[in-house]
Image: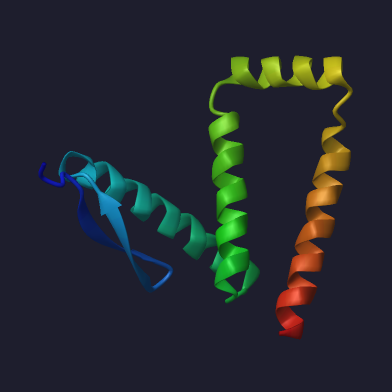
Length: 110
């Protein structure tokens, strides 16, 4: 049985990664890698931070936030669910900020 998976080298924030990728998905993966790399570079520039792990986490959070907020109907639905289950988004944002500060402290102490 032939192996249909090949590998693709992508670059994120100047570092090269080799990832498994079926040939028919090569273009989509390159587009996704370009998007993620752009987000990471924006964050690195805005925060003047050069810690790749922190930049990657922030990029992932930003992309997830964009994804969840693409459709205003989805946002309204999320707000309704948040209200029904008693989710406090401001408290969640404060918690994320606190986690970022802790992450910064740990990475700076290494």
